[in-house]
Image (cartoon, rainbow, N blue to C red; front, top):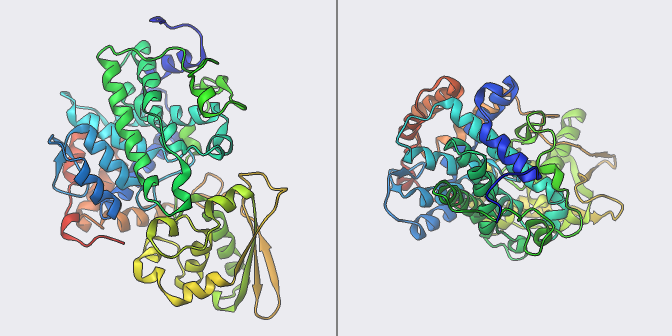
Length: 463
């Protein structure tokens, strides 16, 4: 077992993460990181009112001093990371484009670690640690063949790659040297898990993947910090190695350390305006664009036709409107909700709206066809056929929330306030927003805790 670093990609990555500090971060990276932190916390403050969050809290209830966001409860650091991660991912409104859902993995682990620190952690330290986590999570996924190759084999990258992201983030926050950072990242492979089998029966298992990744990454970092050695060859081409196990064919190990300090992976993370799987967002945008550009209303639509990849069909093609978890994976439902309610936001997924006969009728008029010539990650082509016979088609290459089509600042702020006030008072949510906006000047991040308490338990479960 190697207890020294050499020049392998994971060693270069660990060295970089161990040295990463706020002062080297570009201004745009700092500002984007603050937005993703706020967005993740808001998603969790809403998600604490989910069925999944409340069940997770019953299962993970060991005593401690770390806040369960949106409540008055405290738990152990690992249990808090688990439950807060579940809450952040519960309503499909957390960010994507990283490991995939980096915020719901990295931020619960970091804030749990901060709550146990004996020294103040500055906002600048927290920002650098978030950047470290996003960087590692995405690099692991890219090295394992990318989203379509890795997830196409049945793995859910939020769980498999996100665990390593959380470990790296905590390692950076804790000031680990390069060797301990490598141990944290490599140990996290032993907690790496998550399968897409939930897609076939409407299981809620997807929601637990983010929480388990946050918890596993925190545990891996804690072990490494106390001298527990990780498998130094886990990213080599060996039996039992990460790449052989998770994708034998198309791995790119050099991606672990390519353009470190230049290609900041948080830049490619995206916000989600709609409460559905990201795979549905481009189609919702295409629908909205056509209606806006023509001045037509959704009531004028006769039917909607979609041409999409086989991967997207398998992931989001089902016409679901029953339980919330499978409905949020349904592209047809997202389109129907946008037509009937004018939004595909969280309120469009409330139980009474999922049963609305107008939505069910609209879904009957949505026709999906697989185009075998399309690549797995190609966005769908949406065709609206209007009642007067006119038909218009559109494909949106990058959905709202991406760098190419960003959410406007007012929309980001409105989303934060809508979600955060699902378990906190409006004034408290505003204070939290202000504190996060000035995070790079915050002397002690433990002051965030009071603003993350809430009264979710006195409010109804959002079903």
